[in-house]
Length: 356
Ligand code: SAH
Ligand code: SF4
Image (cartoon, rainbow, N blue to C red; front, side, top):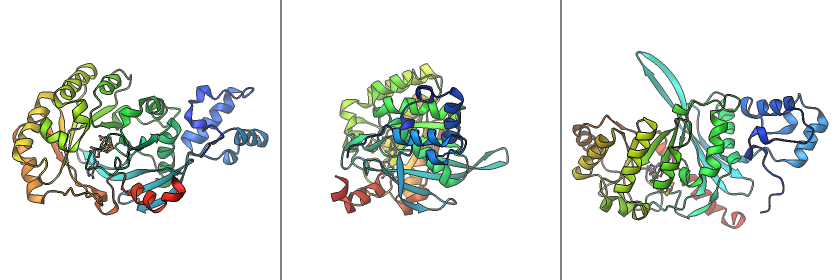
């Protein structure tokens, strides 16, 4: 499908150089988009009608329409978006009650996608099953946050780039999106509330270490040694564990910031005592937190979640190895396909002829 109009939010407001437009008009549009979450020029009531019309003729503002919604604001809520070229992506809103020192607050986390599909083909993951269709643009990354915030009717506190795709494989679109996310005139979300998750693109981890803001980094480890990791993650052949751990060390050294090692638990694949001990060793060496995630079943794939006893025993063994912290995340959205990529998979299967 040929898109004729550029998407306005693909470029930063400083580049919205509509010929004769005074800068206060640019600020007004910026406020509508980022503060009020308006993605329709005709709703920008303080702009003159002829300007609204001109903008509408020259630009698209809304990167996507909602195609499906599951769950509710009180639980996990999942959005399937249809992009302008009829590709599908997903975002998931996850509420959590957090708090320290007796102060409890309800926080909203949005899980954001960065690509349509994924090229890295981890064998357990729904997002990579059909390979990579394309990268998301800056505006398509921002659009997910603006629209999900509108749907939620409240501020989004945390962002995790753990939706479809490999964020570090799309840094040219992601970094400008992050600039707008962090900017007080943009979405105003602080760097320590933003986590990028990567399956281990070593050179890109080092590139990210040079990004000025202190974004959090999570590494999808999923195995304690090369032999285990390569069974489920083909990327491990390109960047073996030793290189990955060295890149993590470098990142930590440059950023002076803790990272998280994510570890999904898959029955009979990576859930044995030896892997738990190795994981604890890596975490101790990197002074990294460990986040254990029981595998979410993907339709059509053979992998299973271990039993609850096995999960708890794994956690106990890791904890005995004394890493700084071990958490066990029980997926809230287990019942609504919260593992990213699954809704889209179903949608593209049922709409195959019209989407190709
Ligand atoms: N590509 C990046 C970020 C997106 S995936 C990465 O791999 O890190 C985000 C996380 O979800 C990763 O840790 C990934 O391994 C995990 N994941 C993928 N499919 C899953 C499933 N079915 N159940 C549980 N976690 C899954
Ligand atoms: Fe891609 Fe991450 Fe899925 Fe692996 S787990 S296929 S890197 S989205």
